[in-house]
Amino acid sequence: MYIVIEGQDGTGKDTQAKLLKEYYEKQGKKVVAYAESGTASQNQFISTIAKLNYGSKQDIDHRTRVLLYIVNRYEQWRSLAEPALRNGDIVITTRNWFSTLIYEGYGAGVSKSLIIKLHKLIMPEPYFHPDKIILLTLSETEQQKRLGTQTDQNWDRKQEVWKSQGNSFQQKLNKAYLKVAKDYDIPTIDASGTIEEVFARIKAHLANNNI
Image (cartoon, rainbow, N blue to C red; front, side):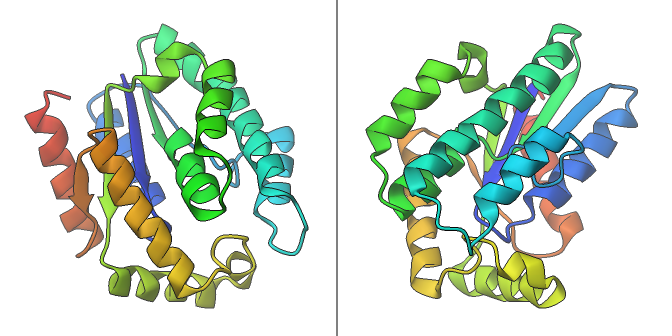
């Protein structure tokens, strides 16, 4: 089973993915969970590319960033997801190719058709068909509050290429996420409230879909 958790920065994707992993493991299931960004990867190759991609002080063209994202995306799919799915395990990822479409396409102005074409050329077909994908959403006010807390607690995160953008850019991304959710028929889940409240919504949604 392949599950994707998407959403803007600050929506709690990684926190909810960790809870979902623990939830399934308590049921005796084997789970592989990872962030497609690669920032938390123990693989030196993947983490190095992630550091290059997210560093805001480096003058990297946005089309180059798209290619770097795809490299990490493919390598983690090949080395982590594919073996787990072949074994019948559960795979949970935070983010997928929609993040690149939104941030680099809608946000940075890279051709959206190019982003789609490149992913279709590189990523295997099963990647595009998760058993479940959900999109966590927040109001712009709540998202800005959470981003402020994140960056206050971790200066390095404040320097990340996307978190260093202003409110108007974040608002553009929020609108793009809602548009993509509508265009691709992706269910949205309100990420406001406590961690436990959000997780309860996710579990209820998955239960309603027999997952």
